[in-house]
Image 1 (cartoon, one colour):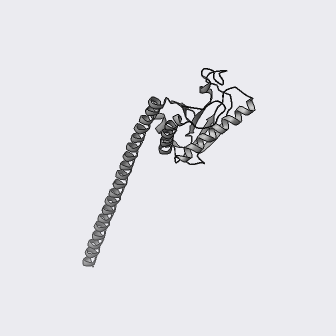
Image 2 (image 1 turned 180 degrees about the vertical axis):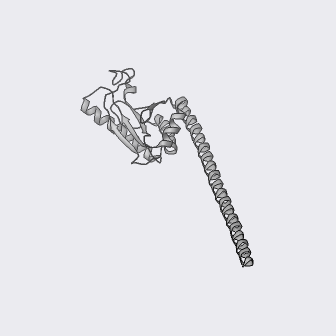
Image 3 (image 1 turned 90 degrees about the horizontal axis):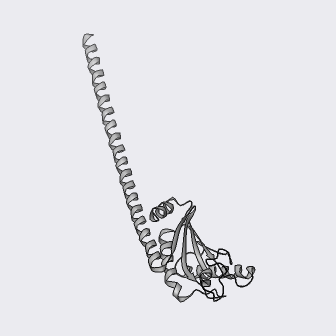
Length: 209
């Protein structure tokens, strides 16, 4: 009887030791797995931060090029960023001028690289010569001409939204036809809507600092 009790006790002790070993081994495996997950998360986050830093530096450099080489004025807005280029038009004309094509080419490259998922409004304007209704139509045709040009440079037609504002928001109030500064009123402006795209918003905000 005493032998049976000792045998049972030994058996129970063995089971207990085995259970402890299994539990300890399982715990170690779980900890190793969690450690691997954390390391992977840290590596992914580091890579993402590095990529973001690279995008910010690249966009900042491209924006500076647009400013220095093409005279662009770039300003942050609540829902995006405005690119005002010296892309102008002859009087009563909606044809993209050869001298403005280099600036548009560069803008197409920047927009395709950094704002592929954003809607870009092409705002057209006119000088105050003629009727307000005619000028709205003329400014819209200018915006559409620029959109067509940019599509020819690889941008998507659906991404670009042309709109005509006519003679509103004149750069040189009252200047028309051959007046000094009238050409500045006959222009297009780009508004890139980054709202909803957190990456584009962060990159743009940092690049404009």
